[in-house]
Image 1 (tube, rainbow, N blue to C red):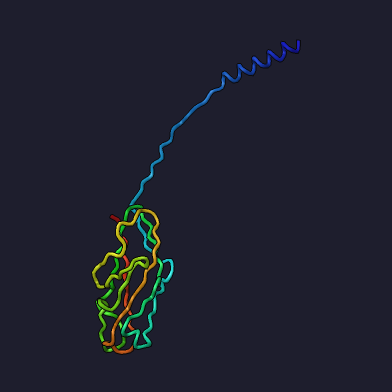
Image 2: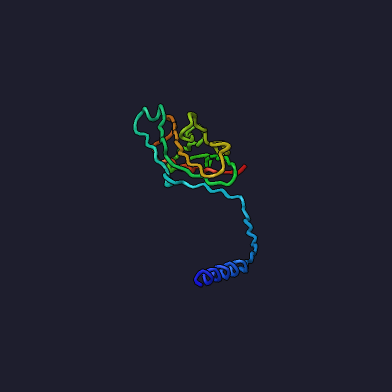
Length: 162
């Protein structure tokens, strides 16, 4: 009798399982991606100060190595250009100092500097999509032609998707 009762429960259980039902539904998800690029300073955003206090500084110039860190985030390949915000340094001095041939910049891992002017100059080319971090270094060499004082120039970095 126990065997019949267990067999009956087993058959009933199979019968319930075979009568189980299911239902499916599909949902479409769309991702609307736009081109996105962002250039930010991650260190050194407040600027850099270069002091000329000896004749050797005026003769040979002064370097500010790894003066700022920049991060570019882009979903496309991109280039980074650099230029001066104005043709001349701002100063309270009566002497006008041009940015070109005085102030230079480079991506710190590179060996040569870019001569700054008011025209975009290539700093980094064909960088892969994603996140790129790099440092910049400056070199200033005004020579002996300018009066003492504080001279200020704006340097503009532009990241452009290709």
